[in-house]
Length: 495
Image 1: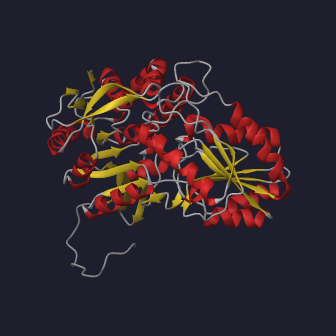
Image 2: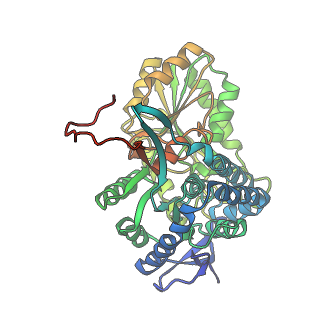
């Protein structure tokens, strides 16, 4: 059985805890590797390596840092297909879908390559007689990232390239379910010339998470995952004096108005609901059909759901792969059963989709769902789409705003006036207008509102730079030789 090591101080490192976990092949249900579950010792080693590297890396010129980032970016592009296949083998998503994840992650590295401009401070001469002021941003120290299984390349790339570009060092705790991609990224960093200790990978479970949150030398923690865990990470991390950004779960709504182009709308919603087997924090999982668009919309969504080709990632005909694990499959199947019991109409039942012995569930579609149904309240994280009906546009907006989550939402319409009202009235962090998955480009920041975010800053973009740096203002005066003056004890003010 292949063993996936940690990466500490620029080289693979075997764990000392003795605990391991299987890494499954989701399309077959067979273990394909073994990953060590680290503990306090591995975290201490990784943080010590990062702390040792920090003085040198943070003091390195921006020019030299950027050369490493450009080299890393080129390596990501050259190894795009390889990384996609690694992701597909352990996650289960199709290779084409995995390739898109790698590309979107690389866009953050593109952004980070512009760090000299992003770290430029301000300068104000003569703020007072003979006094100048300037500002600068400095790195915070050792940073940590705790990332989910569903995007093993993209989500970590939202974090560590910007942290490293700003002069920090980094310890990544990827999901133990699909850990190989992070190890390959570590190797590419080393090939790009990143000094040892600047980027480290420690595999594990809650033991590693707690060790990172409690470690006195970790200055900042970034997290993406479910809302209960995000709240836990934020609370424990901030209690330990760290700055924390913790992105939680979602229940993303698509509102469809009667004037929408139905053919295009159905294509977009089906892709966003069933792509990657619904295992995306930005997946559309709830559709609000307004007025008389509901019946034709449900009919077309049902046809689209039935037409999805479910199969293993390495089959080029596959459009949707399996779920990540047996537990994930069983949870989705159970929630679909709860939806039927609660009285929602199951239009398409994908529970019996078994292309092989893996963790497959086919697309499921519910109609006549209400806000009190478990399938509406729960973040299912599977290929399950629920349709609610609203009499008016105002009712639809109220439904969206009534959700405890505020990650992403989409409106399908041909009315610019309706679009403008929607983007101003919904309490959601990322909004798409005829765009089903409104993940912003890297030069904007990604993040939701309400129970979808704990902390003040979103990831990547300008807010990412702000999170991984702290501001400093210098006020300077260079007096000329002159006769002694009386000491003034008043508070200084501009003159």
